[in-house]
Length: 412
Image (tube, rainbow, N blue to C red; front, side, top):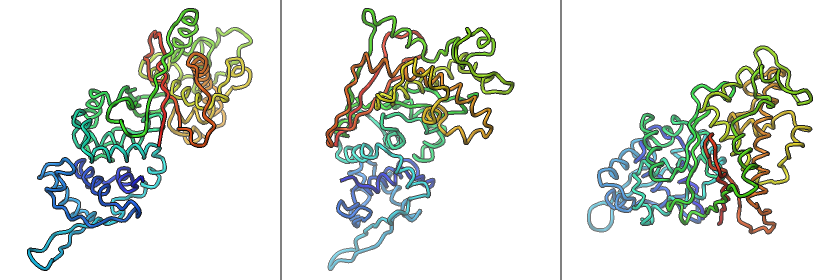
């Protein structure tokens, strides 16, 4: 049974605790919470040295963590006097003393909470794979927070360095070094840098892709089936055309410059140009490699989501004749927030949705290609069928000969 308290603690911001101290608390909750009574905790009879051995903490770090948890009011100490011998020190956890106002919201959004719980359980069992990974306590806590912030495809797109620092207790200036270490260990397989200056994209955070094929995710209920779409025979031209177009809106797209719009042949759907419109910011996507790479990543991620519901995929002819505005779901994927929170003017809103419609059209083209070449099966109809989702790993913005599609399967 899933123990809820360790996950609620993981997704609570506890500014008074450093990384080691918070991970120690998570382990305490995992080992003392009742299975039949979630939220209820048994008394902790083990001393600091015994807990350190069980949690793989040094004796000093273990006692330091217990001292700090008592100082901030998360655990209470009491003594129990037996018939003979010295009094014995016991500890009790104060229920929900670590929670904040955002805890419930974070837990609700944590779609991989089961994987977080199993990672904690595996670590407490001293599985050899954790020794082979050579991950420190702070690094393991960072991994747990990333999994807790990930979507169902194992992609983290809303966690800035400041956010990760707040939830892990790792100093802000050390977060990037820890992320680099997770990349070196191949636990994070790809990273798309965020944008410092982003035109209408704003300032989105970096995007991280977890590697579910890494041994550390063994026995967590998730498996991956790579589906590489390669150039083969007559399909090579078609694949190259779409692969090269990703992140490169063309002359006939609304995300082109004013001069390119003027050169468009008659008959193509166009959006009116007005001073101060979103269109003046569009060249940032066309000219800046960082913005281009980020935008292509969004196109790929949205295409993968469309594969989960093949009926929603529109052909190029359908899109051009019917759709003139991007959907709210795509806008949310692109900017991280609904557009109506950024701009109240109807004219600007219409321009923005029309411009982004071209990017969403590319997602539909890519999803259609993957559906055809990747032989995506229909979703199972039985009630006990495993949950399946898809993702497309980044391939850069240069010429590429394959699209890295993955099928991710979750089992109980």
